[in-house]
Length: 194
Image 1 (tube, rainbow, N blue to C red):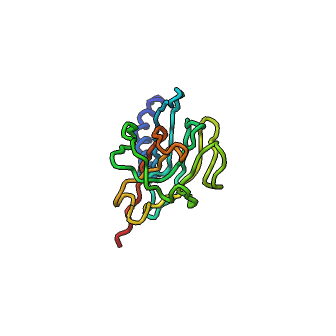
Image 2 (image 1 turned 180 degrees about the horizontal axis):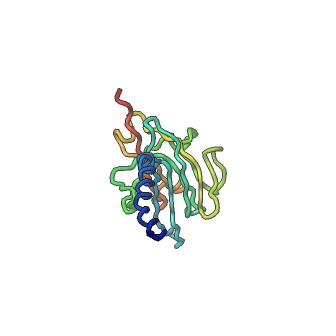
Image 3 (image 1 turned 60 degrees about the horizontal axis):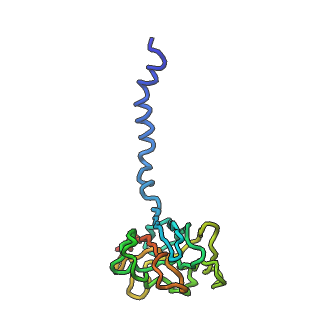
């Protein structure tokens, strides 16, 4: 008689194979799940304060017509307002390489006073447009959504004529300040060819 332990060990490969067979048909679904984009950088202000900026967006691959993206940030400087927007990545800028962040990201979907859900101003300083301007949370955090579509402006179409990204940048109180620039590229499914 074979001891029970040895019998279980001999059956383990068969059980594992059966388990994999049950899971593998769903593997394609997992790869089709929404992609999450991340951006981070550490910056030091002129007065010596250091901030660890983190930006996350889900999803970064949208249907051809566009969609809604959940965006979170943390570690931002609450003394400096920022714009969170969907913009063309400027020539020479490489997402993920802050040494190339020397140009203001523009044009942006909806523009600075956007009320179509494509941009937000995040600030603790004063008031702004309801639904567009939101305050920081503790720790320089924010959580919001952006409604995105591939056509930034007439003839300016993401993945066709330009590359686009969810960006943060200093708001209009410091437009020339590139410390808060971050980029998470976003892509759109091709339109049906039929």
